[in-house]
Image (cartoon, rainbow, N blue to C red):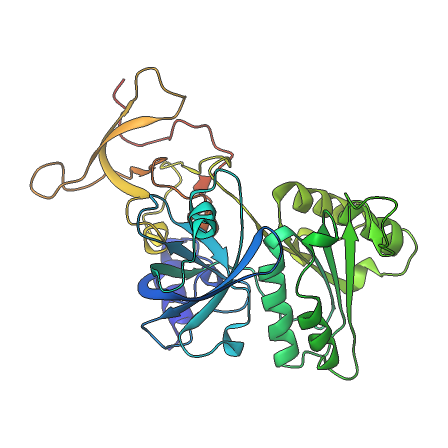
Length: 373
């Protein structure tokens, strides 16, 4: 009997929802390694290759690992930048963009970090190649290149019989990269189908030698492919990866054209500025799935008591953790996301089968037990 059948047999009599197993291929593990190599892809984007002590091939194209380095308080999630089957044993490639004020990216840019020890947790995420034969429309921006490139490389590796249209949005020519690698993928794409690569720049000087697309990548796609009838909206699957505003704009364009949510896949780059997920414990079914995908050990805690923090933002709470033989032995359906530890990977949001976790919930978490005021 498969794991899915076991879960179905166990949950159906209680009418409980089944978690989405695409969020992780394994329970989250913590693996040690070191930075094998670093190279500049652009003036502000780095490629790093991490070599783990564990040589097993883990994860699927489109997923992400969480990267922790000594001296940096919070780890950061980064998508696979290559299809796992294309990597050397135990190696994983990531693209990291230098973000002003970003702890980890500024650490990387500060000096040569080759040989530095790192810890990866994961793999996580449900972004990846769908099983259909419909045309792929991939739209990426910035370092969102990573997840989309890994999916496209995987599609080339397994020779999927489908067309792919890849639109990449950047600011200027100095922000473009992986052009030679994508040309190589075009050469080994399924011989009966095509891989198209379109670059669109929105801040390139008008008097430059650039003769490619201009403007926002989602507008370019709409005006040159949807509005002209060049693309049949009923025959595509859409993939987005990059800044949330770009993804939101692209989804709006496709939905207005008639594409359903079921045909849209995306991986947003969330960070500390993104809203904190909140757990509604009145909806929780005690499946503990969120606890199994934690990339940080203390991001979700089981609490015996919650109380508002004086003078703080709404929803910021002080909490007393469950301690065996000290506090109550049950947490009375009270799980709490600790803002000080949460890295906004949203794995808990994706895995929860009861839709009990969301960044759109009111900041003060709902509990079955009384919140102390």
